[in-house]
Amino acid sequence: MSPKPSPAGGAAVDELLEPAFLENAMRSSMTDVRLLRRKAEQEEVNLSYTRRLLQGRLDIVRRELQRRAEHDGRSLVDLLPEILSEKGRGPAHGLGRHQTVQPHAPEEYESWVNALTGGIDISAISDLSDAKLEKVARALAAAESGLSERRRGVQQVMDALAAELGRRYRDGEADVAALLADEGRH
Figure 1 (cartoon, helix red, strand yellow):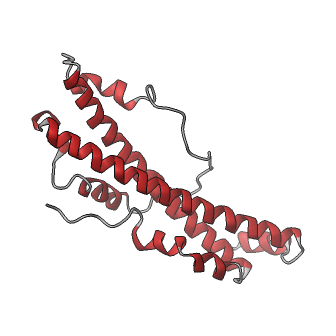
Figure 2 (figure 1 turned 90 degrees about the horizontal axis):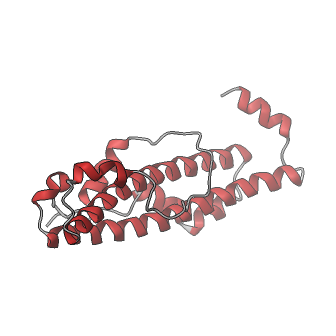
């Protein structure tokens, strides 16, 4: 059996979710708070990308199990457009954030998602037994739940950092002209 992968986002997300992270950030300079917010944004984008990869695999595995249970004569390949469309999914649970960065090192997230299946290769899904597919579905669903929880935590950190920046501007502790000058240098 393959070793269990580290939690989604690994040490970088662990650091953001530590209570001391926000405590320290609130005492940091404006420049540092903006950098920490960007760091949190990058990790949120990485987690979001990973979740999309994971959810796609989970949708495929679940649909294959359903196809078998219903004795649907269509092949999984024939069902892919239906599986990958948004039909059948509930409403999105994202917060509609505008993303200004791209996932960093997407191959790492692909590897992480692949490691979740405990050595079961789902690329030959039609050759897998129902029991193996059910095991994969359970593993992917559990990982998706944990990943989503960590992502919500990172989003809360992003919101807290943004609120702190806003508070500093509102309370006159920061100068908008200095922000614009600093942004102009980057």
